[in-house]
Image 1 (cartoon, helix red, strand yellow):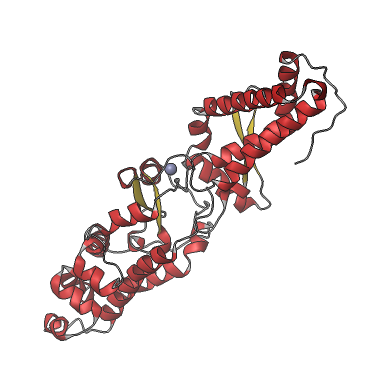
Image 2 (cartoon, protein in one colour; image 1 turned 90 degrees about the vertical axis):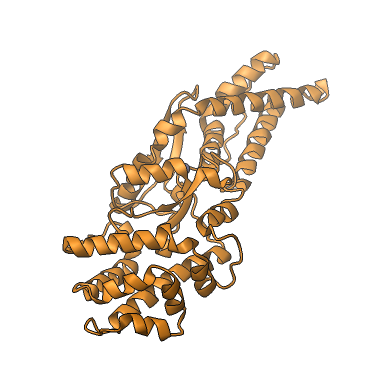
Length: 357
Ligand SMILES: [Zn+2]
């Protein structure tokens, strides 16, 4: 939900994927489909691409692409997608591939191979990511290393620290954009549940993208007094922002998911009240009054708020809890202070203002 800041080491790795695709197309377009010895050319070249191709299925794919009558169109479409990637996510109408079934099959099979197999082959890693010396299961290693102490950027709920519960998601789905299967900006480390949603559900554009947008700025969670219902308010200026926000919240089913864990907020609220009560009773009896009670309550909510601000991106539900703290300060405090005052037999003073945020 919060904008993802890509680790420079991860950035270097995923940019290597882009370089590979660029080399691949460059080779394809610079060779003659009628050349009878394309394989021989690959065998004598000394480029990183040729070294990879000789030991993998990339050799066969290079030759198939050179001989594909749509090769120029495929490369143009790839370039168009990556140059306009952010505009496409923002909802600008985009070109759709009108390949023949044979070309479509070639594209899908090739880019599936790149993503599913090639990234995990050592010869590819040695030539395109020379600084990487981890296990050959590169995608798993990426999830393990760069998901550490992080929460899913889509739902802000599930932890992605363990590689068994995370996946590398294709933001624009691979089924619709096979050419973007290993494109750096299209790869997002997310929880398995959100990844499944993107794959399975109707994916509507425009939509906020975790690499470009901080969704937390565009939405506010609102609660009822007993914290048993939740609504989303949209803080937007433009119509495309509203569409991006609603498509995001609907795709990841934020209201539906969050309503099932509102008990956690009710428990947080109980803890806040309990802590205020304990601290209040530790103060000298002569100083105990409603003003003190209010101050202790505000301090407690502020502490909880700051804790969640600091934990953003590392712990689940920080956005929900930050908005909950704002709700407590604006609307919930009267309810809590009335409860506490009654319990502690303190006289309520209505005129003591608390509004600060
Ligand atoms: Zn998620």
